[in-house]
Image: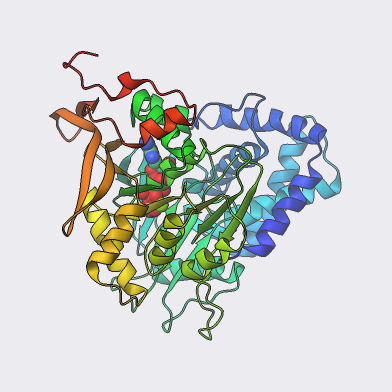
Length: 471
Ligand SMILES: Nc1ncnc2c1ncn2[C@@H]1O[C@H](COP(=O)(O)OP(=O)(O)OP(=O)(O)O)[C@@H](O)[C@H]1O
Ligand SMILES: [Mg+2]
């Protein structure tokens, strides 16, 4: 799917117009704004004051407050636009620094876009603690903050109002949503992923589901700090990635699959040529040599679709060192497995499944989607020889996401895939508010460790020792 073109263009114009000097002056405003609006502060870690995005976000929060006080949040476009222009002039006048006319216009443009684009959702979008926004019709808006879903104190005037916002979002990327195709997926300029589904597919009114990525992606250090994975397990997975194992991350919706995928990809060496394939580009890789591919749904005439399968096949002709498939969900499974089995090792992907066995079973079903006439045993052979490790992630009932287990796929015995756990999260006590437990190795040393040692990589065998059995 393409970037929302005009918004992106407006943003990049805006960014370009912010010379370093202006950004520095603006960050003063941003800080003042953030102090003023006593919001939950976002994730720490902007070393030199706020980022440009942070500046706009904090001005945004102040603007929304302003619009709310003047009862303009749901007002029509012209009124809001005029008020924003006035707001920008006012901010600039009172914050004792000057922007030139162009910079001022760009700032206003950015703020208008944010305020109008999302309607009543704008205050939620401006809250850095909000990770998901879910609209079920005009009256029901939920947000997820710190892993918990809660009802948000905002509402749309009526379903028509929700539809208008959806329309506006869809038209930015040149799509139409209507009864004949009542679903659309898109990505906002800040990276957030949006799905809108309207009647007749949605029975109780138009819905919007937003997964936010704009503010900050969780990185390795975050997962360790949050207790989502142990140091030993992280070290092991890094080693596996460096040794070009094919790793599949499995889990339910929102369990943290894509986040972990991004974190594992951090271990890919800088000189590898990485090709990524996603439905909506979410991965933000720091490596220099990355080619990003994105699938496309068919246009309104039903043409122009680019499937993940097309892209996997295409990626193989791009001389990749590694292919990262954001999520395997259909016929591309076959091509991915074939690639993994024919020298394109070190592949990473995610799959929607509840256990490692379930993941393998689903892969098999997906391979059948590809229309292959391979017998089931041959398919299983292909799967079990391609996939080396399965990492099961889970969102526990206390809202925390953890790596539940890391398993090694060692082969096929008869018709049954052989899967052995290497690391497990053992729950010691659980309640709805708090789940406690510990990450443990099972004592099994994975097969490739010998290879890793031969390749000169240092492997500390104690990472696999089971607690209580002596190191
Ligand atoms: N270990 C973690 N601790 C806390 N929050 C996390 C963790 N991992 C992911 N998250 C947050 O959970 C949300 C969902 O994460 P992510 O997109 O990685 O899940 P997913 O399993 O790929 O979801 P989907 O099924 O929609 O593809 C994001 O807001 C992300 O920041
Ligand atoms: Mg995902």
